[in-house]
Length: 335
Image 1 (cartoon, rainbow, N blue to C red):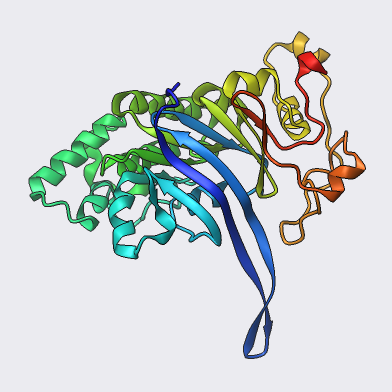
Image 2 (cartoon, one colour; image 1 turned 90 degrees about the vertical axis):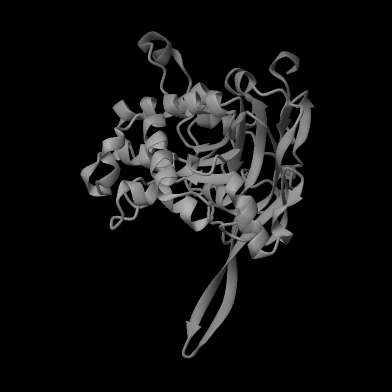
């Protein structure tokens, strides 16, 4: 795990709302907003892998795209290496974006079907006007293909000629082209066969060691998060409910939502699996257009009290390095 000495990314009270419009003849009126990300804060240290987890629709992918300024924030700040990205002009943002890249969820949709593999991987070099000869660019593409364990002879093939796992390797090679420091991995294995997922994650681990990369790893697969991440951030309905180091997250979760998530993860040992008590959450996740008052989770929480519906709990450090947003959270050894 990275030593917490250098903060590479600092997210402070980040908010991203999307307007909801009602078409009324020739006019479009804003009628509401989607609270996709509603005030999240965390630090990401250089060289570490931070997992961002939660069920579908919790806002984790929107958070990743807003951090990279693919969506401009509604409010809050994102500091990359001390630079506030939200206030950078477009030209300056383009320059610093070389140091931040993204691996997308769908390897089928994220590659241009009309471009060859060589064109896809070299595109960042061309767009960013790397002053290199054609031979230098071709050599760099061949080097990147070799790094992701693809044959450099594939350079003139098109995406439809590859499997899903191979396409994701091409996406990883494209992300590495400009030698970034931070890579946001937006559910990079969720669209792949189970047999391929471990290969892609192991490749990401090897590349991190080789180039001292920093990952924000967005996923709903908690077993894979356990394998690759150093710390874990849990989101629910646009807010963060828990931040913890990996071992504490899996062995001593403090938020009832985190406990419910972990209880849904299957254990390979059938005897242990048969002895477990699962936490089954009642009801549906509320709409982000009209989130509940107070704690966002109180409408489904098995231990909710009247206070939970009245006030939003702050994210507090209950034990060193372990933050939780719950009025009722206590350590197991002191409960």
